[in-house]
Length: 105
Image 1: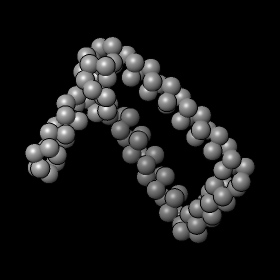
Image 2: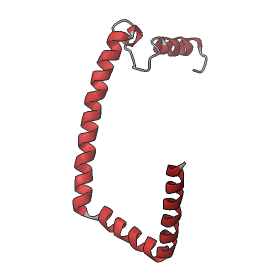
Image 3: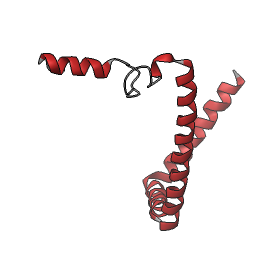
Image 4: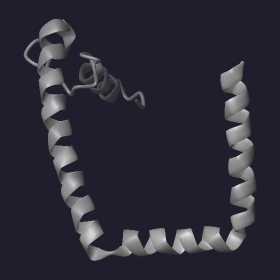
């Protein structure tokens, strides 16, 4: 109960101080954040971080994909046609069959 009361008091103090700062301070913080975000150095660093994150995500996807292909049989492309990676091994065959019969797929 004591922690709830402390949290409520902290919330109230934060609200009062925030409302005293008002809209002007909010706009000032917003302008500063926008200037930082528009800085070419910050954008370059964000691009580098994004590229590294993409590379690591690709590596993780490849590792997890290899593990899943070993553990889940229908993900093996050799066993089921070309294996489009959707997890539905007969999807391509169903499309072909629908085209041949003239039914829209």
